[in-house]
Amino acid sequence: MSWRVDPQTGLVAGARQRRSPNRDARPAGCEPALIVIHGISLPPGEFGGPWIDALFSNCLDPAAHPYFAGICQLRVSCHLLIRRDGELVQYVPLHERAWHAGESSYAGRRRCNDFSVGIELEGTDERPYDARQYRVLAELIVALRRALPGLRRAPVVGHSHIAPGRKTDPGPAFDWQRLQALLDKVS
Image (cartoon, rainbow, N blue to C red; front, side, top):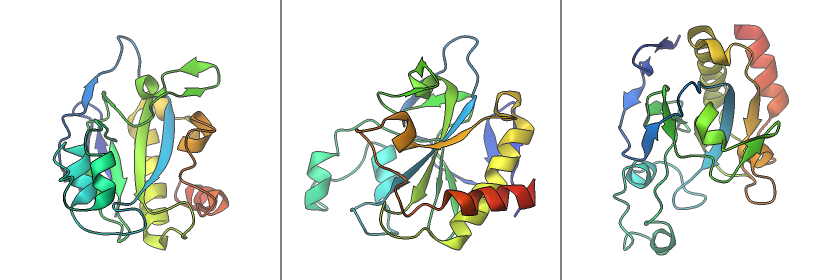
């Protein structure tokens, strides 16, 4: 699928829309200039189900799984999620700030949420990501770079690169060379 990004609305055509309340305005004059890749599974190591949507929508039931009691109070989001089967979900319009990076910095700039697009991949640090996720991710990055001027030459980094010591995702299972090969192919 070829993704289309509307620069006016910040929405990706074809993505399932599930608005997160965990977003706000970017600082004045600040546009996206960095793409951050994350990894998430809820409960840890399990895929599918409604739990990621629930977390990003502030309705994660702490009684549904023991792990959820420790995270249900978090107010987090991302711009986009790529599920194991390649489904694309959008939680926050691209021109708004998603709350995905936390305490972070890149190339001397702090507060990466201000100037980045956060893309979650459903997965874990240790298990290989699915081929469909790489394909969708590469196509999405190309679409983002074409639609948003600040992202035209934007670096693509992992959460671990902007919050070293605090975050490890997308982890050693993420194949950066595979992503680059796909980007070269679809660009």
